[in-house]
Amino acid sequence: MVNVLVLGKQEDCACYAAFAERAEHRVQYIDLKPEQIVQAEQYGISPDLEGIFSAPVDDVISFGDDLQVVVDVIRQSLGLPYRDPQRIKTLSNKALSRQDSRLSGFFAQSREFDLSCSFDNLATKVEQQFTFPVVIKPSNAFYSAGVTRCDNRDELRCAFIEAKGIARVMRSRRGESSILVESYVDGEEFAVDGIIYEGQIIPLMVHQKRPGLKGPKFHEHGMISRHIVNDQPNLERYRTYAQALMSATGLDNSPFHIELRENNGSFYLLEIAPRISGGGTSGYNALRITSGLDFFDIQHAINQRTLKTEDLNPQQDAFSVEFDFGSKESGVLENLDVIVAACKARRACALFSFKKNGEFLRKEGEGFESCLMAYFTAPDQDIAEALFDDIYKNLRIKVFQPAL
Image (cartoon, rainbow, N blue to C red; front, side, top):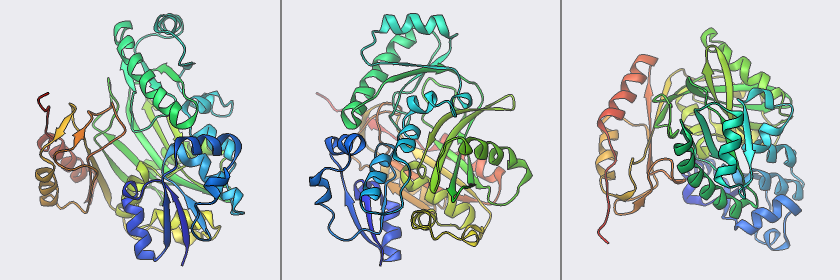
């Protein structure tokens, strides 16, 4: 039996909880308070946090950006193998990663602004340095919250208010946050998941985000994924880019997730993170569907330094279609059961509900929440795209605004 400490709520780790039950791991979930996160990141683990571990710990994991540093601070304190907390902090913060001299050349032109900056000051500097359109975003939020394309000063003003509000929330959770403005890069958006083990960089999957993300918001509705464990020539450019990027990070013995845009044959980095994608749910299900490999098994083997090359041989070759259901308007959810039934009729191989009918749902891009994620298997790209288009066109979440 392996004793695992998971930083996060059990209800947010549905895939991992099911995996742990099958593997007969003993798991303790800890929902850390903001002050404990800040304490651990800045000064180390406080005595009250050390006292809540209920059993000997063999491994510590988390799927949240805001908890990655704490994972390694705890691992270090327990005498377990750990990643460099300072590198993890840099890679978990969009502003810090863009300031890193080894990584800055991978990003589009950007500028950081403190939360004390007024809009007029920010707008003046943006107009001096950039040409519209630009993208404004909080430096360390997630789920595309507060990320907005702005084509002019008026749009920048509205987006500034939203980004600043979310950055303040993140500052209360992590002790720091700021606002980033960067040049908008046109083109298709992709993501790559992989691992680094004992210095070897191994990309595992490439995801094509759908539909095309042009703004003003950038919350993707889904992804079409395939594994890149084998040497498919048409996917070599993603493998080569990921290996060049990750070799510059100083990261080792870790999963990684990168998001990028392709413009006229060139890649521009949008985000880099030292974790499995999608709160663990996306990375686990997409890798399982496309290759038959188990990302949670792989992560534990990395952490415990027991990974073998043969553990990464794909057992199958398929396409994964992920669809993340949200709402274009905020309101009370009313048709989740209908959507679930429609997904089952389309032979969904995994469904994860995060809300119930009657609960309030924030509109896409405003919050950190989803209501349903669905996964499907397809034998080729054409069938995967047709399935995604069918779902995108015909299945819509409905909400209503209650009377005051």
